[in-house]
Length: 248
Length: 202
Image: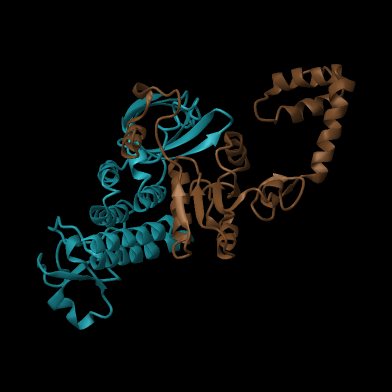
C-alpha cells in the first residue's frame, strides 16, 4: 500500500529511541498516524512540529498497518507560532478538535480550513474569527452543523441575531425578540454573508455559541470534557486583543 | 522456541540490561559478558554502587532534581544565586545546563511538558511547586529553559500565565542558529526566529 498526500502535523509521540509516531491531518486521507524512522534526529525534529505543513508518502504492507511515513517540508509554521501564546494553544486546539473525527476518514474541507487558520494563528484579530468558523466546520463535519444561512421563522437572510439552542437554526432580531432570553446570541461576523472579523465581545459570543453545541452534541455524549487548550486559547486571545486595544 | 545458552540468572541480567537506553538485546549480551569477565574489577563494584544508589537516591522536595540528599546539593548550595530560577523539563536538561556552567543559579524541574496527545495536563507537572516557590518570595527572575517544541512552548506560555501578577521577570532561552550550524541546512522557522532575535555585533 502506498499513497502521497499533503498534511498538517497535529502531534508526535516518541517511539523507541530514534523514531516517532506522527499524527497528521491529510487532505485526502483524513487524520492519519504513521511511524517516522529517525524522527527524533536533530534534522527531523524541527520538521515534525505541530502546525507544519508537509508532503507525506505513506507505505505499509497492509492497509490496516500503522505504516511508515516519509516526510518532506512544505510550509514550516511551528517556529513562528511558538512566539504567541494564542497560537500555541490554538494549534493544540485545532488538533484536539480533529481528534474528535475518526481516523482515516477524509475531510478535505476541514483540512483546507485548518491550513487557513494555521497561517493566521499568530494574528489575534483574525485568529479568533477563523477559529470560531473552524469550530462551526467541525460541528458540520460531525453531523451537528448549525444553519446560519437564513431565519428559521421568516426565511430572511439579513439581520440574523440569535440561534435556537434546540435546533441550531438562526433567527432574526425581530422574530427572536420574544424569546431573546432563551436564545443564544449570534455575532454579526458569523452571519452567512459576513467576511468580517469579530471584536472581543463578538468572539466571546461566537465561542459561547460553538462551545454550547460542542458540549451538548459532542463532549457530553462521549463523556469527555472540553480540551484544556480551548480555555488556554480563549484566555490568550482575550489578553492579546486587550493588549492590541491598549496599544491602539 | 529459541534455545537458552546461559543460566536463568544470566538471561535475566541480559533482559534487564537490554531495557537500558542505548542498549538492545545484542549489545546487552555483550555488556553482560563483559561484566562477567571483569567480575572483580567492574561487576562487583558496579552492583555495590547500584545497590547504594537505589537505597539513597531520592527526588528533591524543593526542585524535583534527583540526588542522595533532600533538599538536593544544588538547592542547599549557598554560593548559588537564589533570586534566579531556571525552569527545565527534565533532570537531563538540568544536568546539560550545569555542564554548560553559564549561570550559577538554582533550578526547578517540571517533570515533562503539557501534552494533550499523551494526556499530560498541568496537574501532572510540578507547576504548583514552582508557583509556591515564587510565592514564598526572594525570586526575581524565572528563566524558562524548556525545549523549543510546540509542547515545550505551550508549557512556557502556561507558566507565564501562572506567574501573571507575582512580580517576577519571566524570560526564555533564545531560539536561533546552533554553534557549527550551517544556514543552508536550517529550517525557515529557526532562521526567522534567529533574525528576529539578532544582536548588535560589537
